[in-house]
Amino acid sequence: EYDKSQADVLLVQRLKTSSYTIVGPLLVGAMLGKAGKKQCEAIRTFGESIGMAFQIQDDILGVFGDEKKIGKSVTSDIEENKSTLLIVEAMKQATPAQRIILEKYYGKGKISLSQHEKIKEVFEQTGSLGYSRAQVGQYIHLGKESISGMTKDKKLQKILEQFADFILQRQK
Image (tube, rainbow, N blue to C red; front, top):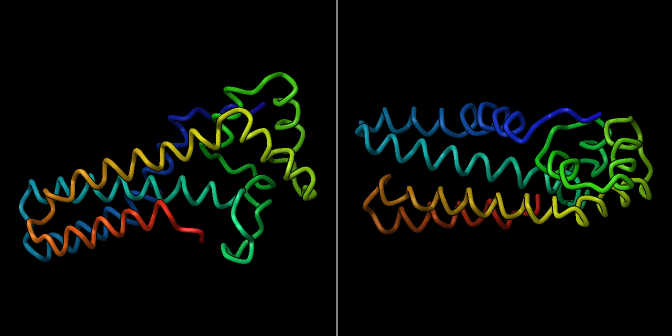
């Protein structure tokens, strides 16, 4: 049985993707640029939010993306039992029949394209895909709200907004 909670998944994503990959480098740059405490807080909020959005979007693309664009198998996250919002929310909302499909194929090694399609259908039918996409949007919004605290330069604010939008729209 799948025993990860949304809190478990988000904590790993916050520590791995947001803090390590995005917030840390941004804060190093901010410190070198002699940013103040409030500016660093805004940068941290931006980085955490954008990092979370990036990871959730990455997980969506890992199942629903185009293999040629993303450069990896769209079955690998499922085969490797990757903990994502998609699977957590699907397990939470699944009917008994949908739960059987998820438990039969998710994390059980190599799956066929038809089994992959069944899992995708469950993610869509349970609202898990929609929920995950909404979470990406919320994190992007939160990140954008912090931009004005990062810089007063309108040109730089626009670049940061475009960066946030890219995370939302990316296909690979």
